[in-house]
Image (cartoon, rainbow over all chains, first blue to last red; front, side, top):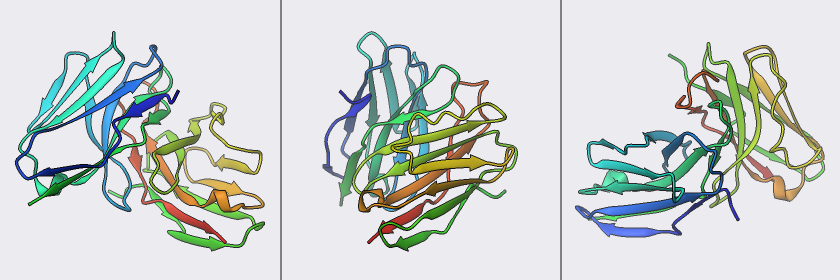
Amino acid sequence: RKEVEQDPGPFNVPEGATVAFNCTYSNSASQSFFWYRQDCRKEPKLLMSVYSSGNEDGRFTAQLNRASQYISLLIRDSKLSDSATYLCVVNGDNQGGKLIFGQGTELSVKP
Amino acid sequence: GAGVSQSPSNKVTEKGKDVELRCDPISGHTALYWYRQRLGQGLEFLIYFQGNSAPDKSGLPSDRFSAERTGESVSTLTIQRTQQEDSAVYLCASNKGRGSLYNEQFFGPGTRLTVL
């Protein structure tokens, strides 16, 4: 089993749609969680951290369920510029060190 | 300020040759990471340097792979006797290291390695 597993993609949605990505992780000792965004042929960049109580940043909402070892990302009112690959990321040690990346879910927002 | 830089941006080599990839982290970042990303795949952790501690080499796929870091500055990733399956983008990242579980990692643009 992979350490971090994500929904297979691609997700093709119209502008304005709401889209949700899911992710599960295997290491119950993981303590920090993130969503990174990667544009085509570019490096990953942090989209948002995921906190225990859930957190929101504009159109983006992240949720964490430690009991189920499940992380989600919700994008509301999707824009063309949201088209990218979304990477679910879990820290692989307990000191803020190495990160374990999911394989990513590709999102394509169409006009 | 300057971000993480990597060189070369592209490298084409023949099977069996050695290659050396370079990473310059953000100044002041004590931690440096190397990842590999094959086409259409997620990032695969390779190695992690934190200050003067022994590096975490747990992700290196074989003894053909090695990395060094000089103090808290530049790092080189060396691949000996390259194989076609080594073809990938090699990404370097840096951050402020331990002390916070939510330290963002900043990535360089990567080196695209093609082994013919």
